[in-house]
Length: 344
Image (cartoon, rainbow, N blue to C red; front, side):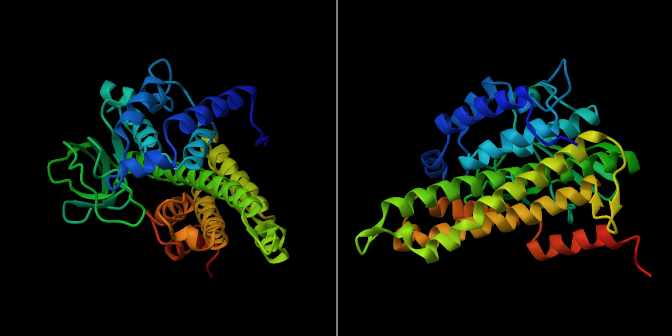
């Protein structure tokens, strides 16, 4: 197993690092509030072919999940207010269910995944609920596709994400049965993996931002970064960020394998995609919370000011890390995966 980047993947990183730095970033986030979506940046991203890059060729770009996590991390580094993760996952699910429209492939229509089971015809707290024209939902063993105009109004949330409830009563059943639900469930695991990569990007930028600040901020005639307590608080963050990235890359590798994985706790060998995607979300989420929390703290009172960027990263990390599950619920889900065959 080689989790290093290939030459092609390094090119992907360079291209999307430049794109998100130029077209998105904190000012784009501020301008997109409170909806949490920058339509002009999405239009420019669509021109690159990114919305369809996860779809098989010749229709799409044929990107693997390992390729897509690179894009997701670069998006997270700029907290890009774009539904690229939800859209590429939804596109891959729709392709497998023979329901992919050309307008979704090109990004003209925004697609998203309903992360929780439908309740009484309502899809609750959908990450792209306020902006998606197409939503895929799971209702028992049926896969539903909603084709409707988005409300363009988000539920109030501290992360300023495009979250909304949506009625699914008029949705069409596009597939049902065990095979269909397994496709949807793999989509959920892919979403967890990609949002974990997004959180790694948030962590990476938060560390860089905080290190630059403590170098420039002076007290008692010295940069505050020269004080041991601040050095200690920052010392472990790069290692945690690298560890989270490594775990995300392993999850993506498992998702790309297309074979049954393994859970061997005796030898500490795990290659099961569902398990690794859950582990990634928990660890990348916790790491992003630590990095942004310390960054906010070391910025002092400025950290709580809207003019400073660290508070944006702080809020995005908290919102994205628990939008599918609270950390405690995700830990319980992971425990079930690890121990379900070992209960006496």
